[in-house]
Each structure stands twice: as C-alpha cells, then as structure tokens.
Amino acid sequence: MPKNNSTFQATSTLSGTTQLLWLTLQGLFFVLGLGIFAALILAPNLGIKAFWNVLIPLAPLLFVLVVGLWRNVCPLAGIALLPHRLGFSQRKRIPLKWQDRLNLANVCLLFLIVPARHLSLNVDGLATALILALLACIAFVGGIFFDAKSLWCSGLCPIHPVEKLYGQKVLFSPPNAHCGACHNCVIPCPDSTPIADLNCSPKTRKLQQLAANLLTGCLPGFIWGWFQVPDCRNSAGWMECVLAYALPWGIMCITLLLFLGLRRVLPRSRWGTLVNVFAAAAVSCYYWFRIPALVGYGVYPQDGLLIDLRHSLPYWMVVAAQLSALAFFSWWLVLRNPSPGVWALRPPFLVKR
Ligand code: SF4
Image (cartoon, rainbow, N blue to C red):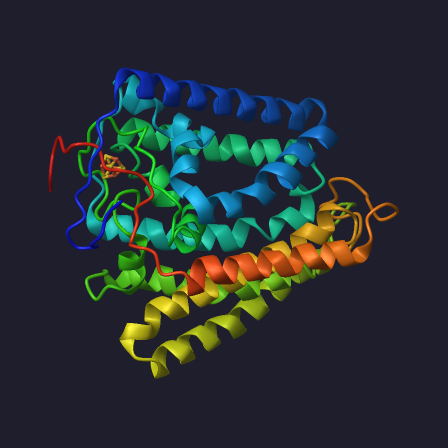
C-alpha cells in the first residue's frame, strides 16, 4: 500500500498462478454477464431482478470498498480490452485534451441515462439489453482504435465517474489484472493514482476539475430526486419524461450550488473532506432509499422490489439497516483517515510518457 501520493510507484508483476486466477474470475463474470443479458431478453422478470435489483445495488458498496476488484472483472471492460488482448487494436493515443472531454462526457452520460430507467429500462428487459448491447459495441469499437482502457474504462464509461467519487479510500489494492504492462494509456491513470489527487490537486487539469466538481456536487441531489420518481409501467408520455428528468436534475442543481458555495468559503486544505462528505452523502442517500425498496418498503412499493418482506420483516429493522449504512459510509469515507491507496497496483512500465 502506498504511503505518499506523489511518490507512489508500487508495481506488480503477476505470477502464472495469480494470472490464471484473475483470468478465471474474469471468465466467470463474463459468463455471468452473458447469462444476465440472455435473461433480460428471454426471461425479462428474472433478468431485471438480477441486473437492476441485485448487481446494481451491490455496485456502490463494491466501489467504496474495493473498486479495483470490479475494474478487474467488469464484463464490459473485458469487451473493451478484447481487441487489445487479441492484438488487433490500433492502440492510438487519446490526446490529454480529449481525455478530459471524455471525462466530462461520461458525467453527462450518467445524468442522461439514469433517469431513463424510470421511463422504460427498470421494467423492460429488452430495452435494458439493447442499451447494454449498445454500450458494449461502443466499448469494443473504441478498443479497436484506442489504447487499452483509454476510450472506455477510463474514458466514456458512465459508471467511471461514480467509481472515482466513491473509490477514494479503498480497503486494499489488488494487482491490475487487465494491464500486463503499463503503456501510460491515460494520464493520470485512475487505476494507479490516488484518486484524491484527481479531485483536489492544483495539478488537476481544468476540464477534469470541472467534471469532478459537477459529479461531486450533483450526485447527492440527483440520487435523492431520482428516488422520488415512480417507474413508468405503460409507455411514457411527455409528462413522465419531464418528471423523470426535472426532479433529479432540479435537486442536483441545489446540491451543486451548495457544494460550490462551500468550496468557495472553505480553505483548499478542507476540499478533500468536503468531497468525502458529498461522496458519503451520495452513497448513503442511495442505500437510504434502495434498502427499503428491495424488500417492499420503498417510496413506490413495486419499484426496485427484489423480495416483498412487508409481512415478515418489521419496519424498524429496515430503519436500522438504513441508519447502519449511513453510519458506515460516514465513517468509511469521512472520519477514517487511511494512507492514500490506489485502485490497483500498476504493472511495470512498458512505455512512460
Ligand atoms: S496501468 Fe497503464 S496501461 Fe493500465 S490503464 Fe493505467 S495507464 Fe493504462
């Protein structure tokens, strides 16, 4: 584990057994991903439950604890890196200016795609499968032209900004199982650089900082607003579309203003804590609404339901789970002060820019 942000250079070379282990894990997650994709088309109820009500609710917790693990096994990352692994990627460099634009675009994509869940994706397996297929195509085609993780995993992927915000204080850093050797495909590499640097360092480039501020300020309000909107079970009219976007976007503007205001009045030395408070607020808000919804106590009881336990589980237990999540994330992200960590250990350099 690194001790110093600026001097962090820990690298890892995978032994044959470790490589085989990661390859097996990646294969398992790929098969699982394919299974969920097939279920979304052939058995939509099952596919929707598996994807939206099991996998997605687990993701934020995983990002907070060991985001490197997810980065190593994500099936979409596997697809994006396929051309690279099979040796037919052209491995073009993305200029820094365009890397920053991609980082801003992925924040915008996140805020555009997630409200659409209420309009159809949450209840329509085929629509979810189509979106996943589209994202997989973009990731794959990007991998044909651009180097390693630069276009998708550390570029356009709309989940990537959330990984950055939540993965500030990871439990441990696994080896980077995707990059056999580092060719500096992105600068700075989010997998190998302590993330706090990307949010607060004076060295952070302007557009990167804009993307980070936008996400950090907006996300708590966006999540709160998103959970106030019901799923649309019939075809969505313009009123439903307006509601699905206006509520999360409206409230995210309020939290963004709050974040920017606080950033203005606080000294730079407190900005890191401010980012952590907003990260904790966002992930706590997510589980505050998500935990009850999974067992039928949600704002709209049929939305996001995994298993209806309203007749067997007393409500106080749900509240206890909500408060525990709030306490845990506040402690993990705000109160704890671990040594700066990275998502994954950088492999030895092949090329250094
Ligand atoms: S470790 Fe190197 S090759 Fe791998 S994603 Fe980071 S910069 Fe790219």
